[in-house]
Amino acid sequence: MRRCMACDVDYTGHIERCPLCQSDLVGDAVPGVLPRQIPFLKPRRLATQLLLFITGVVIVLIVFFAYQFHWDWPDVIASLFSWLVLMLLVVNAVAHDVRPLRLCFRLPYLILLASLVWLLFTRNLIITQFVIPITWLASFAYDAVVLVVLRDRAIDRYFKYLIFDIIMGAVLLVMIPLGWAPWHLLVVINAAVAAIMLLSLVIFAHRQIGDNFHRQFSA
Image (cartoon, rainbow, N blue to C red; front, side):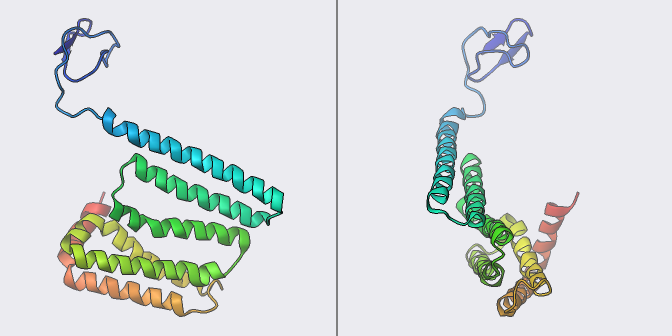
């Protein structure tokens, strides 16, 4: 066990200096209770650095080709923001070791954010009329598969995402009075699917829903 003579404190684990006073420790190292994290963190840190480097290279290339071939700048700016948002999600997933199923739950929100960026710069209603509603229908299909396969575990592990998906499916109705969805069918279908999913959860898993709601959202 290593010891700090200045603080008169003993330490386990592979540390060279006292965390309190930064003095050199004496004695032999004794393995700590927790495993060393360096072997696990180094590959993730390297992957994060590579992704950030690739992001920078892609941004430079987009700007270069936009200037060289006279691309429309609203489309260029939307592409840059969309790519940046995508890479931020991937970097976050790599850095925090996000599980694949959880990452798939987050993906529709990434697409939603990128779509809103495109709408902001291009004013193209195809995004709100087709891209966003179809993305959310795909999200509901994914939710249903996860619920069927994992059953109770799906609610315990992914309750927040299921509830947020249902809320977003209903919120899409706002696009109708805003004039963002001249063809209402896909938006209305999303709202109907959200209502059906909510009804099924309330009827077949109301106790589990109540417990998870209290655990997730209570102060």
